[in-house]
Image (cartoon, rainbow, N blue to C red):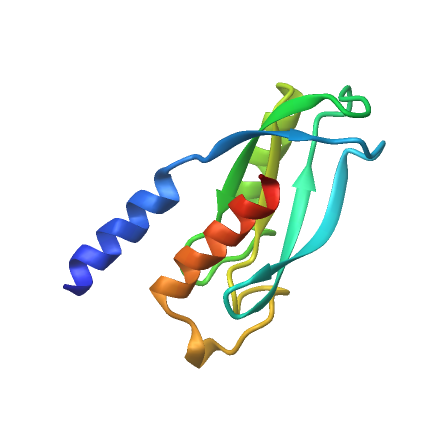
Length: 124
């Protein structure tokens, strides 16, 4: 049972969720808070600099692994590379990780999945 759950989470983390987001701010990167399953989630939205008010751009949701956070070097490099190619990204700390709210003992695989849904819905 646990092995199957781990596989599902691994597959969820491998899936890149793409959508189009209207972005009207002039800055290329913004720190923000998103309501998650177990408190607020700290996130970084990084958009291509050439996007101007009201236009849409593809965006990728980047998720860290167990014990990680949104500041991981790999995620930062990936976000920078996507930005250079004209693609936006959002990376966030799951509940009880990094700057996000939530108690470690209350963290579960299911509420991590819900956190990912909350970020996706925020972008929609």
